[in-house]
Picture 1 (cartoon, helix red, strand yellow):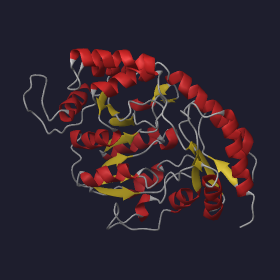
Picture 2: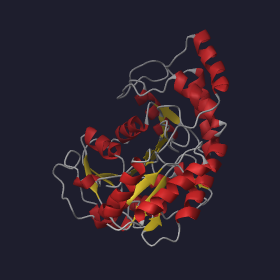
Picture 3: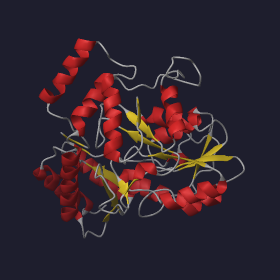
Length: 366
């Protein structure tokens, strides 16, 4: 089997000393020494003032919304994303308002965001899709002018910079994922990043039941902690992030060299220096072609994935009362995009084989 992704892992013999120390000290969680060290090293790596690690990116978005007092009203977001983005808005008793995306980057269209703002709008929750930065300057300007909060779903965008500046420094909070499938992983995990030190302190309280440093309950809270074992894996993996990103980029570009120039295949629009190459999305000329390619690959032991289908405004469970069928770009992209296998240890010959099968299946008549 060639899976759509595989985790990037440090050598096991480099991880075992961390486990031995955890077993020796008995410190498994509760803001332990490995967690604190990971937060410091990530802040240095990402060139941000602080990193608040949590259990996963969904928790990161949840406590970000709560910490910014976005607990009712409307939140403008994208229909072209993983369901967690919309789920967490509804979980916090807000209403997701879906607007269309840009045809090239597949990120929120700022003009559509502006048009969707109402007196009930409290926040904007954009997604850096496949790590390509949103139009952060335009979105942040709209938010400042209209008095709105901005929480970026940066689950895909670990270690990305925008014109030399950390992408994590835009908006009020950026929420990262350290899931096993991401560029950098702690198995499960995530983080909130903000430039506001008081907001960072509140996020830390909220991830630990609302306790402050003196163990007084002073705020809303939940159990959103990252364990010491997760933090230790992150520390072991962090030293390889440049190597992993370089390997992914090389395999991505190998796919491009095999697939470019075909009339019925096109690709994501991105700046090569503002991308982390975590995914290999391909756009086909029609859903019929996509389904033919998908079936052809699966029959040969390859498991591509339809990220993200269907567009969320069409899913009744996350948009029960909203208007449907009126976001043409998102609907077109979601029905024709397929992510091909891409990960650190994927063999070059497998890339060439998968690309060859894609061309073979895409070129067949309906």
